[in-house]
Each structure stands twice: as structure tokens, then as C-alpha cells.
Amino acid sequence: MSTYLVTGANRGIGLEYCRQLKKRGDAVIAICRSVSDELKDLDVETIADIDITSDESVASLVKQIGDRTIDVLINNAGIVERVSLSNLDFTSIRKQFEVNSLGMLRVTQALLPKLKDGSKIAIMTSRMGSIEDNTSGGSYGYRMSKVAVSMAGKSLAVDLKPQGIAVIILHPGLVKTRMTGFTDSGITTETSVKGLLDRIDELNLDNTGTFWHAKGEVLPW
Image (cartoon, helix red, strand yellow):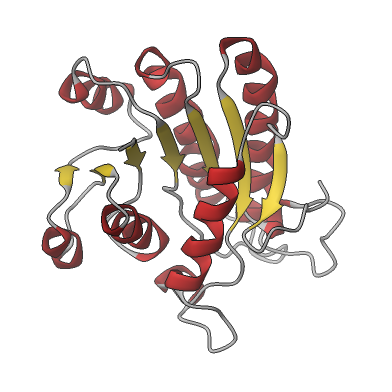
């Protein structure tokens, strides 16, 4: 049995990660700001009131984990706010960087002492953070913050490889969640997370630092 820590675990993809991991017999530490009823019903270990944009809050998370080892850290927490060229809300852009980019890095750096040779780090990004794939423009804060988190993931892969820690950068597909307005053209969280866990299971030091679609396709930067 492996121990997985999942941020942003109270709904959507994060909640489904916890559900599938528990079902297959892994230990789950669910991290969130507030606990949803759905997360309560899963009956997994939950650490709430964690703000990944706060040094003090993340330090509290580390303290609550204690001396346990984390086998897989899934950096799932993220936000999206629509920012167009005609409405450049720089406060929103900064907020998205704080959560989507710096939050991941803050959590990962703080939890490094809890990882070991053979541990894995998964980073949830988005195809909207692919520069080559951007054919529609817009979404400035979200796109820019996802480019940044992907770059951080690549650097982590290089820096942590000598310690035996592999890093994967993941796009979940277009998923029916609150973040996407439960789009009719999206896939279910169940389908997405099944593919995401397949990619994480296949992660090793030979393919560390790769940007993957949940379906198994390597995506362009």
C-alpha cells in the first residue's frame, strides 16, 4: 500500500483521485481549504484549512503529516478566472499565479523531506498552458500560470532525479467539473482520473519531466 497526498481534494478531479485511490487500497491524505460533504463521505484522512498560497499554512500541513513518508504527491489544487485582452485584470492574473504556479512549488518544496528514493510528484497543468497548442488566445492568467507551473515541473524533474524522485506534468483532458462549467463536451472525472493514475503508475526516472495527456499522448510545450 502506497501513501498518496492530494491537494485540492474537496471536489472535481481531486475528489475523484481520492475516491479511486481509496478503492484500489492506497492510503490517502486529502488536503483542502474546506471539506465538502462528498469528501467526508469518502472517509479518508483529511487535513483541512490549508491555503497553498501561505507559507504558514503549508508549514502547518507539514507538521500535521509528522514523520510519515509520502510515496506520491499529487499537486492538483488550482483555480481558473477568465481574463481577456479587453479586460486585463492584473489582480486576477497574480492570484492565478499564486495558486496555480507558486502554490505547487511551495507545497512541493515543503514536503521534500517527506519524500524518498522512489517517490513521485504529479503536477496538474493544462493543455491551455502549451505555447505551441495555443490557437485561440485569451485566458491570460490561466494560460500564463499553467506555462509557469509546467516549467517548474520540468526543473523539479531535473533537480530531483539524482534523489530518485520522478516528476510528471499532466493534462486531465476537458473534464466535466465546476471549473469548466460542467461542459457537455467534457469527459467524466472518473474517466480522466483513471487515465491520470495510469500515467502516474507508469512514471519512472526514464520518462521524468514529460508533459502527458491523461490518454497517454505526449503533449507539446
